[in-house]
Length: 335
Ligand code: RIB
Ligand code: CA
Image (cartoon, rainbow, N blue to C red):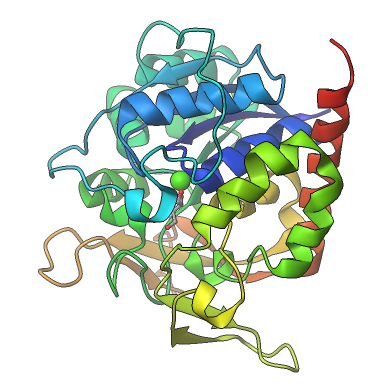
């Protein structure tokens, strides 16, 4: 039985790649998307989610818009990384359909309440919608089957030395989410910076027809300018990778597909190694705001997270290519 998924996202190139993965994965049943302001503004994150779904033929997936700004702070964006369009060099047709009516918060609450214990909630953008939803309906934390985020880091950030972008864009929302009473599966930079679209990966993507030539590869080409200040460089013998303050492209590794890792975990949890932890989000530090302060030795009863610390990179890319191949075949198959 495929795992029911709702994805809250801010497309964004890697969000778009995560949507493609979810649609293609036989392990997942993507019920719906909710959009949030993040990489680009809400209108664009919403229409980009629609564009991607229509482009790959997943026309039955509702996209419900959510928060246009963080809870308290002025918005920041990542256009320098994802391009003004939010999809890098990919130029997809405008959506023909309209976003779903209503607000993302109500979609999240109503859908999860309609299937208690059955739905895995995945969030790959700032956590504004999730915070508003659990504030409005605290029982949500007991009604989801699992809650997985791409966000945070037990080591260093990318939007600042302390903060990863999704947390740093709305630290107050993230603080609410981590304190809401559920166990957050935190798929952070500690593992996602190892999931890089190298030249070898792009060679494997080439045969996938328009999915590759119109979306994935042009998206990655722009995303290659992703100035991840940290470049995880696995040592020759596969030891714990070390970080060098480097632009990803500068060392030829390739861009990190952060959000795809979180979605791949939902499909295949064995891809990641996780450790129990207590995570608190810094909201007042002048230099550390948005930091996910991670204690891997939580006091009894204090655990609120499972933090990803290891990834099977080869297995990850094999799973991604399998899912993308399925989408590419479906795109060639007349409706
Ligand atoms: O730090 C990476 C995260 O920030 C990803 O979700 C990317 O899409 C951006 O939102
Ligand atoms: Ca994202």
